[in-house]
Image 1: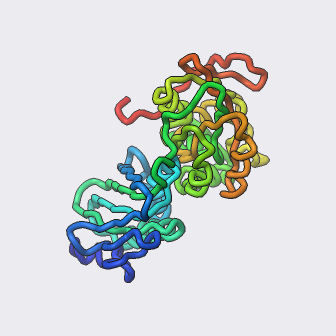
Image 2: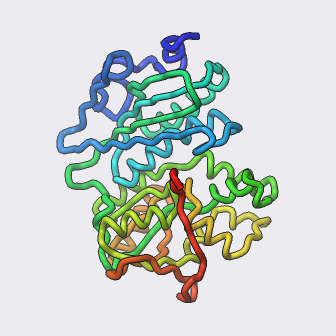
Image 3: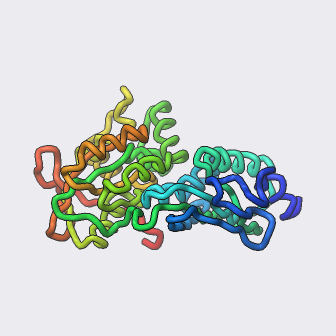
Length: 330
């Protein structure tokens, strides 16, 4: 199968071309020309983000291609969520070592299932032969002046996180051979690692409520640090409140020590949740945003004027434990 046959069979859909499927009126021209044409609605700004996934670095060779297709788009949609943007469209650049039709079928099904869920059209991209590498650029729209940024946190704000934390790290430690989990518990953690749920609806619901936001991809503390630097503030983080967000804790077989739980929750990575700040007076509004988007939200600390991060336990005692976040070059 040649390159263009591959694209036609697995990545071109009947609605694509002129007026491709996507957010209403946004995609004027999709797959088939040298460029796609997007038209944001009046009063909206484009939000654009790119993520690359490399085999052996971001995913294992044994991952189900359906799940990999899902995750490849999910990590990009998570960036739109952190900005409070609505998804419009995406491009896909795919490097393949060979043409494996079974793999391509599963990957494209997983990719398009999530794309359809969020009304996000594939409008172009590229394919080539090489090591397995997936690069997606996603486009969204957000009202002018309404985007959630990293730079708005203020002293006195509450610190929040969405959904669950740490389960992906538990699965990774099993793959690394440093941890053993019962089969059912490992399956739960692995699903969190391989099929994250981008919090797109929550991000949009938080516009006008949250003062700053970022997506949690490299670990909670690492991604929180981006907010703190951009805002010129510090934070106190309740490590036990964060560890309480580990979904696997609800399983009867869960039996891990406090240190490992805190490590997974605070610096695990691959969570694709939102960490955000909001004024203390907005607690009910934040809770309502969570209910409206069917997403759990947990208050895990507060923003302080003094720079740096103080980590405490449930009793507000300092936690003397070293935490690091993922870095591609370390």
